[in-house]
Amino acid sequence: TYNYFNDFYSYCLDTFQWSQLKPNGQVPCPRSAAPLVTLIPQSSDQPTTMFIIGGYSKEKKENKDKGQVHQDVFQIQQQQGKMRIGVSIF
Image (cartoon, rainbow, N blue to C red; front, side, top):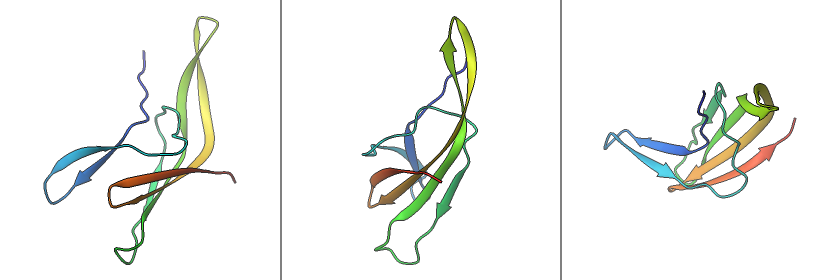
């Protein structure tokens, strides 16, 4: 069996510790193999923007696991420990 997750963590390079983030908005369904792109802001008053692109998961269909390829894009903005998630459609 496979376990897929949709939780978010942030790693602090100063303290070498992980902390769980609690985003608001629609959270992507659990998935794997989803590329993540991060855009670093040029100033501290702007949010860090990330994009989660597609991915893969399995769903139960008639007692069989069926693969599901996701073709969605989620835009995530993080600033001062807060996250906002929105769905982008191309």
